[in-house]
Amino acid sequence: MSTEQFVTAVNADELEAFVSQHVPLARAAGVRVTGYDGEILSVSAPLEKNINDKGTAFGGSLYNLCVIAGWGMTSIQCEALGLVGDIVVAKGEIEYLRPLRSELKASVSAPSQEAMAHFVESYERRGRAALTHEVLVADDDGEPAARFVGKYAIVR
Image (cartoon, rainbow, N blue to C red; front, top):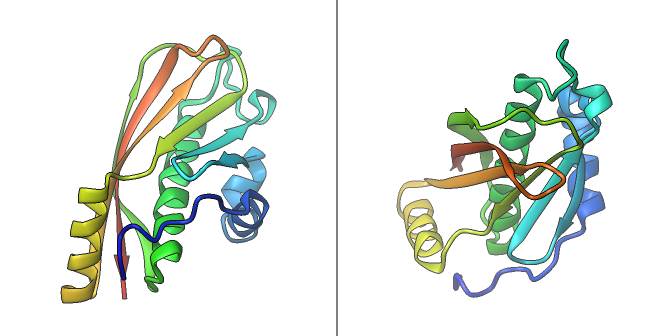
């Protein structure tokens, strides 16, 4: 299958429903899939459900949101290419850049064509493959509040 056969849009409601049904923590945190335009996946969660004792976003909630965003992007890419298997986060690292006092909003970009070509080749040859995603959380002014880098694997 060609790596150029990507979806240009995905039903955000379907992805959100899947995450809400299968990830109780996401449901409790109020995670919402706010959009996917074929290039960027956006997810959010209300501050009220993810607040700490300082009135800012809880670090664990930021990490949770980022993991879900990266998993969602991996899932979208796999579905678009017809790759079937279990998708898991293999590694994740977050850097907290500043306190967040507003809605938690994370975004992740689609992998490059080169990364996807390598991903597909690995999956076809070995039955497993991995993608690395950078997820950014920004405040209402667009300033970065957290940066997450996660490695996601699919295993046939």
